[in-house]
Image 1 (cartoon, helix red, strand yellow):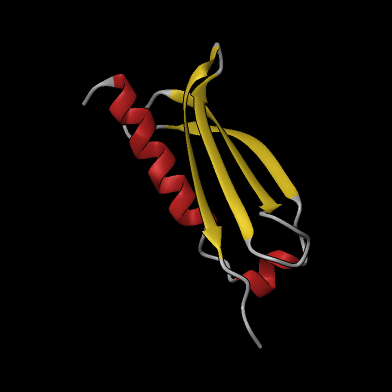
Image 2 (cartoon, one colour):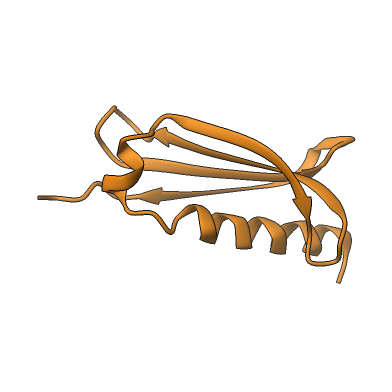
Length: 89
């Protein structure tokens, strides 16, 4: 596996985890973000950024952003974005 594939796999795993909460749970904490250190599948030390933002307007869909990068190479990281659709009650 290449270094870029390793980052992409780590980012894919992280965005899957980031999207496990339902809109109703996330809406209470949006906007919110965090950065933490972890390891890729190949064991490289990286930083994980996770953000929950309102996509267009507060109370609407939530945009989930994940960025995985090596601490000294922020620009070469992998960014993924997904949306969690607002629940209709």
